[in-house]
Image 1 (cartoon, protein in one colour):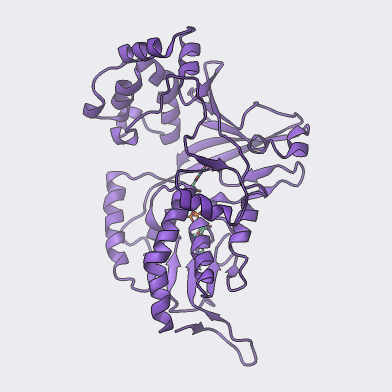
Image 2: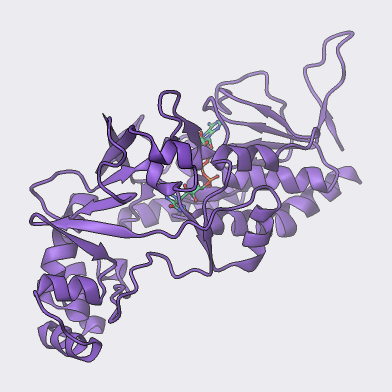
Length: 394
Ligand SMILES: Cc1cc2nc3c(=O)[nH]c(=O)nc-3n(C[C@H](O)[C@H](O)[C@H](O)COP(=O)(O)OP(=O)(O)OC[C@H]3O[C@@H](n4cnc5c(N)ncnc54)[C@H](O)[C@@H]3O)c2cc1C
């Protein structure tokens, strides 16, 4: 059964097989696959652009690609996802490196032999450094009752206090002794000089930018996209269509079981007439004296864009993390015990929505990286959406 809606006399009849709420990576992947299988999806988003939180734009003054909702780096272990995204864009060979500012000195992250030797002003071998860190640890990680105890058991008190404690406090606005130990199962620490941030075999940035990648995903003319269209407010939307919903789960159910907790980020932009301000893309701030958690220098994600990279202009965003209130962009699910109880009720309520499939980070109240979002959307399409669409065609 395909659907015609709101057709006035003389107007061309438009048929949709599927409504997709949210033009983020989850919604776009579902739309691309649906069209590929011969179906016509209508994708809506309340924002004025596609790409969800991974959206980026090219700044008019500098030509720099700016990631509007925070820096996005593509990296994955999943070969299928890598093959999938490479259908729509080629990728640069960008490899991510992060540095951290602590008490007026810059250290490489994640903690590696370079960080350790610099911190202790030493020239230790891998074995010497491992023995030293081991001698600084306290207690057993498995017995830790909170995040601090776990971190100290894993990397010792010195490194924890220098690089983890205050940074974590700023990220969560919560004393690490009040945070669950489960936030860390392990803490990346390397006893060599490898400072590559991600260990995934497939990494890089889309060559023409994130939006070119997203645009290519929905090139098929069977896909229609409506922007600035809120699912809960636009009365002209077709009713009764099979729906993939990727908006906030609690909003879908009118917050009837309560509001799920999120963290958000405020960005403060700075512009400099300099080739480079900080010499790297991401500089963490590990001390409480600086309230921002990190600074992003966007042009450093794309050194291959020679003209922009060499120019005497740069854009830096400082990030400030805080609890999200109503109206803020939800970024990271908090997942307190109360949140988990509320989530369980919404997941139960979903069972009554036979025509709706919930997905994505907002629809599932989960943190997903981009590759995980795509993997989840591809799986959801195969297992749930395609059978639903085929059923509708019978
Ligand atoms: C600060 C930050 C940094 C990140 N960095 C990385 C990174 O470096 N690497 C990485 O792999 N991943 C990163 N991620 C994760 C990445 O952003 C997500 O994996 C991805 O955006 C999830 O896609 P999605 O479609 O599930 O959700 P979203 O991108 O949030 O898309 C959901 C869409 O639904 C729309 N919507 C919501 N409600 C409605 C409504 N009522 N009507 C219509 N539309 C609606 C929203 O406007 C939004 O566009 C980061 C996330 C954040 C927050």
